[in-house]
Length: 261
Ligand code: DAK
Image 1 (cartoon, rainbow, N blue to C red):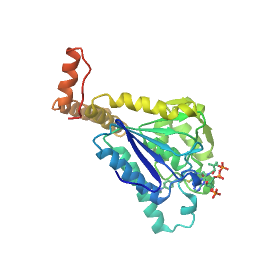
Image 2: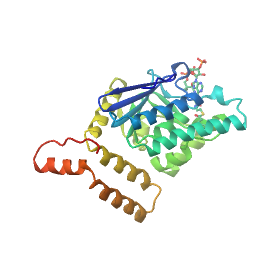
Image 3: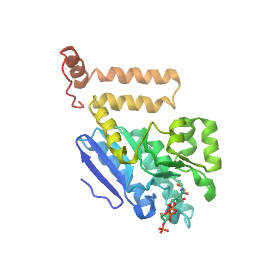
């Protein structure tokens, strides 16, 4: 298992938990942390023990308070390009992972923090979570997919209002507009996220991976192309042991033992 400077990577049963741990800067994302995040997500993807991932922030104050402003402030175009590439790599690895990632948002998720959570499959939030895209306050715009993923999640008008005002919203409002799936008391957040991750981990891992892929593509493809992809992935699962095991177990009235093969 790799060791990281600004992250913790822990595996318990089928679940990997990646904790962004730069508490002194409210877990703000500097370039090194973005790189480590890409490496840790790749590690989880390649880890045969892992079937689902939880991404969270250290401490009880922040998930991620955004990209690291102290690192960005004096960046020239070359450094900004490097920073952007590091951010893009995290988005790409999250997009293409073979395992689902639940964001457990435990506090401030601002700017790059909201965007990072949005790049995960879905969000569970503590009742103390706060979301927002305050980049306009800094004279910039979201740079980690916020203008693209937020309207897909909450609708164009709500996303436009949030991004142009820089307003910060609480967990209940985030739930109301569909930004998060569930809000729970802070002390129960990780346990709730884990319960959901374990439920997913009990299913056929290849079915989960293919369903995730089809779902991710659904926002990019026409209905016809999306249905084509779904049909191909559905058929491909009939070449797996898990499909035989799942259906035989149903007929034998016993729990299935999936191996991801
Ligand atoms: N960056 C660096 N340090 C941060 C930080 C951040 N985003 N947020 C907080 N900190 C640091 C503070 O400077 C402070 O450090 P010390 O003074 O103790 O050394 C420490 O964390 C504690 O913060 P506060 O003292 O401010 O704590 P408060 O409780 O008073 O306030 C707050 C909490 C979250 C409301 C406040 O810290 C705040 O407003 N933070 C900034 C939030 C923000 O504007 N975030 C958006 C940043 S812009 C890109 C990808 C992504 C992005 C850009 C490009 N590419 C791929 C191109 C994203 C941009 C952003 O996220």
